[in-house]
Amino acid sequence: MSKHILLVLIMVFSTSSCASAGPEIRQTPSSSSTKAEDQVKPIPVSSDENRPTDEEDGLFYRLLAAPEYLWNGITYPIKKMSIFYEQVDLLERALDVFLNEERTGGIFPRFEFGGAIGGGIGLTAFHNNLFHNKKQVRASYLFGIPDNHAGEFSFKDPAVFGSLFTFEANLLGLDVDRGRFFPGGNKAPKKRNNGRTNFELDEVSGDMKIGRQIVGDLRAAFQGRVFTAEGKGGKGRDIPSTIPGVNSSLTALEFVPQLTYDSRDSPFRPSQGWLLDATFSYTNQVNGNEFQYIGYTAEVQRYFSVFRGNRVLLLRAYIAKLDSVNDRSIPFYELNQLDRNHGLRGYERGRWLDEGALLFNAEWRYPVWAQTEGSLFVDAGQVFNDYRDLNTRTFRVSIGTGLRFVTKENFAFRVQVAGSEDGVELLLKGDVEFQRKRGTFLGGL
Image 1 (cartoon, rainbow, N blue to C red):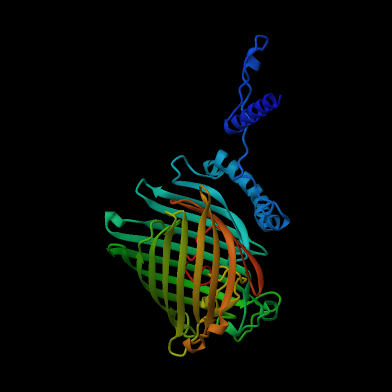
Image 2: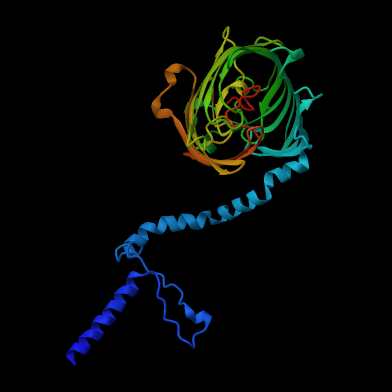
């Protein structure tokens, strides 16, 4: 009897071992079984390696994973929106409405928040292949509140009469009803409301620029500019009448030689290369003898391609200086600025002004969608009257993030938010960062 019991136990344990070792169990078909019952479905075998331990399933590890769960929840709407964006190709569909079939010209709305005139709406018309000869023409108008206006017209010929010379002409009209000025330069009050004053400015400016490639990526250019401007106290707390340029008119000629080395792979969305730029300027009043000054700028930009161009690191350094000539003055609206429109993006427009400006920028750009990239940046700079005034303790710092909507051939707009000791600034503009324009007021950096 004991032998029979022992034999049965051996058979039971043997059957259990075979079942646990094999991936599935098969039953012996009987005469009454159907086809569905001929074979039992596989029984998945749990792996001890993938099974969380008691420690990993505990409260401590759940708390450590909480930031990841939170981040996934926050970015879920962005993920869904990016999927929708890629499925419908939203930007391209919008461009179809405003551009021609060749994408060489069109009319599209222009909007700006936080720009040099405070923000506004308008229109831009352009054509990048005029007469089928790659000549470019552009006209834009911007209306801002309370009663600010900015109009611009530009023409560019990349090969004058088929030569190696380039030609640019620009016309600018500016009517600022409530500009902002902070007297004191780098020593202006830290609380912006304590030092802010207002001014009005009317300016008309025209310039022509001729350039030529010297060798490789090295170019030389010469620009001549004529402008007339009239500044006066604005509504509210007026700018002090002792500031040069207040309650006076200026008509002046300016001459600017320029030397540029540009090895970037794209002017709108660079991923690698260098940009080195140096200018010298001489400005002389022709309707009086109150204003006469010289100026110079030097700029270095370096783009590093990371992860095969999937990420881009930008490092930038910039310095600008104005000096009066023959003991004459420099109008306040021509001074170098550092604010959200001039490289120090965490400070309101007109926050820091003086004869000199020193600025450093570091920016990390990463892809978000096909034609959109995100950015994280740090800005640090200061204005100064004399080089002896430069001090590491007086650098102003801003930190921020943003989105850039851009392709290799064109730039749409950028949205950026930056914080500083003054608070938080929001900027929405339709131009590329660090692109200088005529005059300091609209975009000296």
